[in-house]
Length: 185
Length: 250
Image (cartoon, rainbow over all chains, first blue to last red; front, side, top):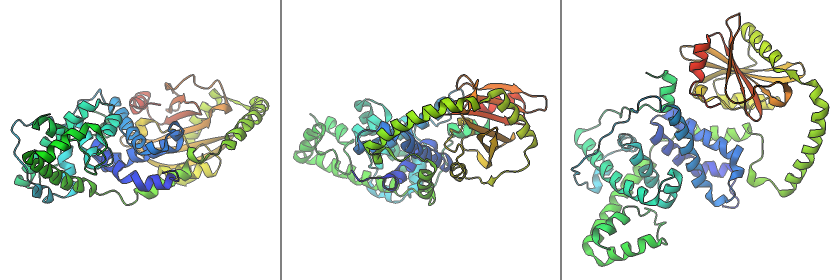
């Protein structure tokens, strides 16, 4: 890690940062902008980071804070995320996951409430441990564990339903940036 | 620890095994080795999670994203913090001393902010060309930085995501001014003028935009941050300008 320079940091982390950004924003434009803004901050404010081994956590934390700032600016607008929690959760077998592609799984994740979605995506991207996820999302460790456990059930249930129904319409999520651009309601 | 408690803990176990040294997992992992039912459950969990993880990792990333991120490094002129040797800091201090002396001499050449705003209004009304046409804001920043103009400016949040139209560099009263134009749906083109804050007398007091509408229909919003003074202008009314900036954290 000592010899990491900017190009290496980009090469190592930009793909999973983008995927995490997409899971938050729900669209490619905002995900790319979130990722770009994160790296601009690394270049301009990276000196705040004294421990170079924490670059990865710093990047994910910064990206999430940028998104949270966007969302705060849109708090005057209604939340449009789908809110639904299943009570009865069917079991899922490993092969079901094989029948969906990456985009379908991401679309399924986008149907979840953000407080489940964010830790789940970080978990499945395998970039961070649960302790690091807690740090990125500024949550207690117990909360992260609880949301991972519950979120996994919901995600798998939705994946099973998607597989039974075939491809379902995309989640009706409008990101804060899209909402700002649209001029609100 | 019973089986349910172990399951709850093991659901957070890192798929790459990075939790192996974490004491939180020791007891649960031990139990999964001794309890066949729990062991089978854990193996099935990891099989499912590994497959889901592969799907997330297969989610496509724009092919040009990496190139754009690498280009950003050229846009931001300062060397990365980890590449700065200590002596550079010492040199920077010396430079600051010299710069301070230069600033004292240079301050006599400052211009009034009111004059700048008048220049912005006139330039917006009479703008006939741009030096660079580009929808790529990174390219715009680079073009300005290459010409010693302000390129590392902060785009107001309300303009983020908007396509840039292009940019122009002005030399005005001995000062360099950057102009970046943005296309805003439903509004038209708006013009962001950026000038080094140290070039001005009576610069805006803070980051809260101050609005002004001029006789020729040009509305302006002006603010500053620690480095630059910004004036956003366009042929629109003040309400539209306020709406455009209402979500902006400038």
